[in-house]
Structure formats: C-alpha cells, structure tokens
Image (cartoon, rainbow, N blue to C red; front, side, top):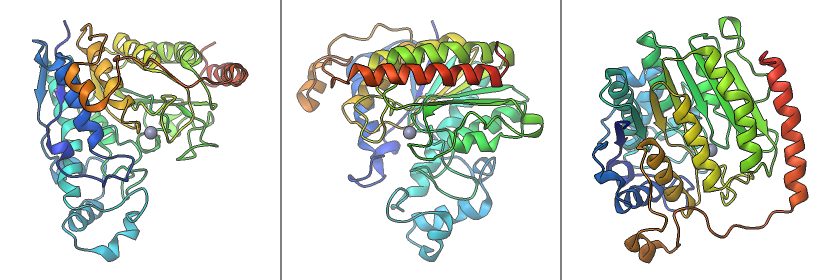
Length: 369
Ligand SMILES: [Zn+2]
C-alpha cells in the first residue's frame, strides 16, 4: 500500500484572494472537508502534514531576491509603487494581506512533500495548495505568486535526481517549462488547451527545449472540446514512451482540474472519470511521486476531482455517494459526475481528428515512431 502524505492545513485558506477571484481559498477548504468526510484522511496509509513556510533561500531556488522582498512588502501593505513592476494589481494577480505567508506555505508544502518522498518516508506527497506553474522568476503571473513546482523540481535536481514533470492543467505549464528549458535533467511534459485560444498563449509543439535541453520539453496543445476518450488516447500515445525513455527518479505532476467540462475558464470537455483515469496513469508511471494541485475553478468539481485523485494515490475505494454532511452543505449526489451538459457530437469528432494530427506531429518531433 502506498504511503501518502497530504500536505494541507487551514493555513491554505486562512488568507487569500477575495471571493470574486477564481482562485479563492474556499476551493481548498471544501476539498479537505470532502476528503475528511469521505474517510480518506482516517486511513492508516494517509498522513496529513501541515505545510511550512519556504525560507528565503528556498524561494531563491527559483525566484530573485528582489521579487521575494517585494512580495513580503506588498503583503504587509507597503511598497505599492512596486506592484506593477512585479505584475501585481487588480485582475489576475491582486495583492492581498498576508500574501507572503499564504504563498510561502504553498511553496514550503511542495518542499516538504519533496523531502518526504526523497527520504522514503512517503511514496507520494500531494501538495494540495500548489501547482502554481505560471509564476516567473521575477514576477507574478496567472494567479501564481511563488512557483512551488519549479522550486521543488530545482531542489530535486540539486539531489542529482532526474525529474519528469507532467502538467495536466488546462493551461500550459509555462513557468516550469522555461525554468528548465536548457536542462537535460528535467523532462517537462504539458498537455493543455491550445495557447492560441487560452492563457498563457505558449505551449506549441515547436517548443522543445534549447541547447542541452533540446528535446526535453514536450507540449501537446489540444483543441476545444477534447473529451475523456480523446484526451486519454493522446496521453497514452505520448507520455508512457517519453517517461520510459527518460527513466526519471521521480515524477512531479501538476494536477490542475480545469480541463473539466464545467470549468468556467477553459473549454476542454473532460469529466471526473477522465480526470481520475489520468491520475491512475500517472500513478502507474511514477517511480516516486510528488503531486501538486493547480487550477480548477468550479466549486462543484474541484473537491470531487481531488478527492478522487487522493483515493487513487491511497489505493482506496472512495464512496460512490457524497457524504451526507457534505451533501447537505453543498448539494450534489455522487462523487463522480452525474449530469453533464450535452455537447454536439460533431464538435467532439472534429476535436478527435485535430488531436490525431497533433499527436502524430508530436510523435514525429520527439522521435517516438
Ligand atoms: Zn489552469
């Protein structure tokens, strides 16, 4: 039985973006409530560990000291003239009180997870508040302040481990890709909605790495209305062969669930069945595993999808029905999706055909044929 560490505590939702922001802390609180009520956190092979704050030195594994200092000042309500320079302001990246503590805990959570997996104390660690893959070295981006993924991957690289990073968020994992674009020690793989129709706009097939890193960045841009079946087919066509060839010591996965058909920010058509099947595939590929959260902006979907993900990690059979307490507070009936919007089958078919040609091109570029 895999030993699982869930990195979470109320520190993740004590402070955060206001209620109108898509990345509101309620997502994480409600997810931990559901995991608890579903009985997963009482299992003998699941340990809940509170995150710690990453130190300045640890944040410096990826971020510049100027940026870390600016986040601290802004978090205290100082240094507002600096906000724009670091891409903070109304919109995607608002400053909030206690931002440094909240975000440094998400980075510290990834490091705590990496330490536990590296020491053998856990087989898999799930940093629920992490997966903040858009943050850059010297500025915030796409709701992300500190890039816990890039920080943890760099920490693992410093152990001389080979790291495969698999990013299944609906948005391209740009911050992590660019962080290791020159490296042959880190394989980054991102499956996402095509950047021509979604933030951050990058993640084309032609982004394959540079210098020693040539061939170690892999992107699969997917068209709108890609569904479970097509997504899983595409994943199977690429990811297992890439992982097999790279032979990593550890897989770091970003498990954003904004690929779901009900997600308000993007246009892929996955369901909880597809999302869970992806997590099962990653579980089978990972020799050791650091899992991170990520995007996902439907409060109906996120708690269910990540509870199902934790059940895969813990090799547990989750209950079919939502627990009574959770149902009375939030509604719903089953843990998996029940009623979903109908999508025109012609759109699905068009997506399928487009994915077939993108996958063929990706296999050619990465010499998998
Ligand atoms: Zn996302």
